[in-house]
Length: 231
Image (tube, rainbow, N blue to C red; front, side):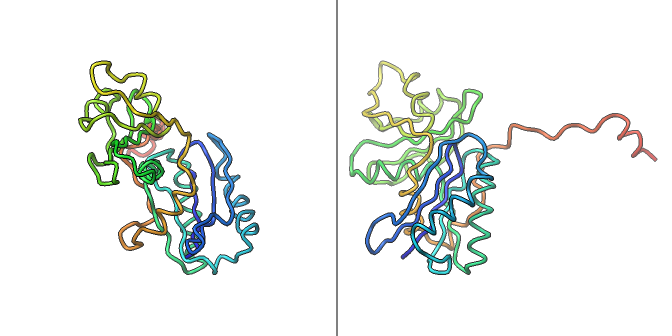
């Protein structure tokens, strides 16, 4: 199976092609960035596909991170995945950023619970907790940092994600301490591809996975506009 994986959810723009038969990434590229995903993504995908020497119709599916993350970044990646999938007549698979973060740790076959954490700003984090075997312990949620820490009652955890250091710095001294802290700006694109290969297209659509409303609010109309609308 050939998978094109795309990630623009957080502070990176990444694309890769996975060949599951050889269990290798045929081509991959990642650029760390906070802005500019829209301009960087399609040229990157073109370079990755050229490096892999593949036509889009050779792909079996397209996997993309769907959140939580940057609202703008998510739309860029999801729109690209949907458009390419439609043109190539292949399924587009949506994967949460939290699961992509956890996959690399679960894949190490360690017993510690894994807390994936993403900075949601305003002293909040998006987080999910899974057992060492990948089974879910706490579903994806958004909560204040202290509440996210309090939700971990499963022993010394492995913290991963761009908010891993935020949790580690606030971790209480009187409870089991984290066994590891992996502060990664974005998930490993290889694991996005592997999750895409394993996911069921019917239950993992490529659509945004939001846990809270956007911080930006539409501006109120100026008074004269309201007056003009009054009969």
